[in-house]
Image (cartoon, rainbow, N blue to C red; front, side, top):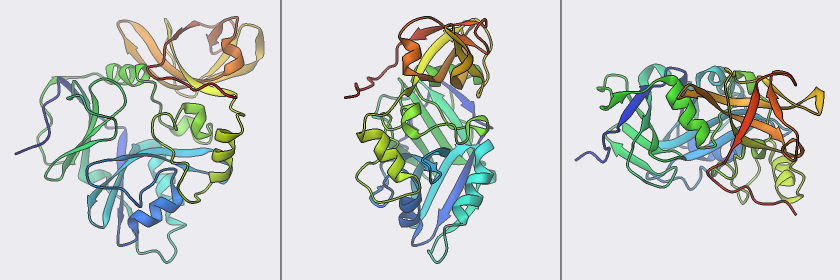
Length: 296
């Protein structure tokens, strides 16, 4: 019997793709390169993970899971896939791991109304998987392209993006490559960083940001009446010359734009934030669905 339940609504995510890591060393190789623990990954969970530069800046964000004993799949935004695959391949060296673009083999769907379950838990039906995401009823379904589409009502791309923003989740896209250290988009709060695992590119910078209390920027949720695009700059009313942040994700819900943005924490203490320039559309803060711990 299938462990996968029918959602209330779904959308084919054509702007996502899949990297396959195949071989006896697939898990240990990814463990050495990404921000999460892949050495202890089981078949009932997925991993949120980032791929960083040596300076701790995110080149890509992704979800990884075991498809077979020696096979791990990574789902990620398509506009970062080719560069990520090329750079990861540079570090394989003698590891028994073959990396390839498997996007043509799989269809990725965003689901709303999935059964309640902790984020990053995984359900299976043959070669198809449902991965629970942060936010109420949200999941990714990844299945072979020949499988029937999930049931449920059609979901628009704007509705999906708005639900993602309300969940306080942002992915690195082509316009934001190397824009963020993981904590700047609350990545560690969503389960994307393991601080107990061994070294990976940028690990020292990421750990230093965590333990020295030096974080000055965080992901926040806003609403506005204007359209917003990923990578668009945000300005504070008191400092029209220097951007205070950048849009990380954006969708439309009930006629209003819901967006996530990486913002200077000091810019939240007074004045107002505006899209594009200091006289641009006003951003109205909305609560995050999770707590940001205070810095010492």
